[in-house]
Length: 305
Image (cartoon, rainbow, N blue to C red; front, side, top):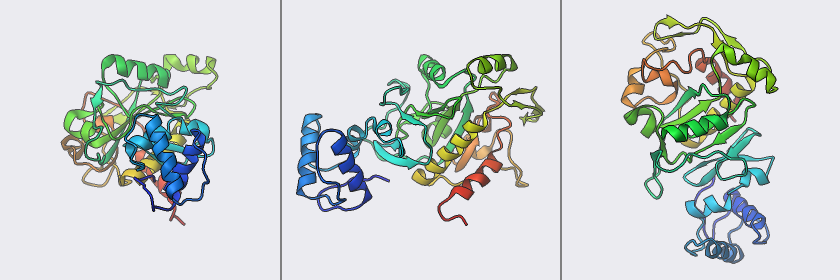
């Protein structure tokens, strides 16, 4: 993962910086060594972009260097925390500052620019009851709320906000300040099934007998398999970047908690949870098999057998 680098440093982050400089029109040899030549190119880039020309690649310089980075390198995708890129093992990722990107407007989140590094401890899953990630982002902006990611019907992950900022999605003292939020595209109601077929996505699975807050829900549209695959890739990446444990809310007997969870409510839960774990007014994402998906994510860990 990328960190602040300067003259004398060596390694993968320097390679990433040199590659980005070449793409931006500041040609130099990619050798992984931050020498005088690389420092000079960094200073030129900083001067041309109205940054302090100190030759040090910090968060502001990284942000501009890697703008449109995912579009430029189809084989490697990144998500962003505090202006710095972190690899994700998924081939359909679009950042807010790339062509076709979706963005949360200012005034709809806790802006932590230039502040102490935010350390999220939980990842909160939502379904958007919208027909696409684009329509979801528009509605979020209209309502002056936010998340960090939107997951579209085709498995494309849109990062709409840097995870350094606190999104307004789930409880002022819990999910908002200490969590990462995602809206997963899903119209929910069965009446939208024809829409998805007409749009070429095919029929959505239908979830039956899902339980939340002690009651059984009527059948509703479920997530596409491709969305669940993308979600697992994002969980894996965010767990790695932020050291969020692969854990889920549990009852005292160890069974999955399908209602409000005290640790979530107090903002000290660490792991992956649903919106309904914070309030009885919400039912998303009922039926999402977080324990099963977490076990599948664990198989993807680098040190797994």
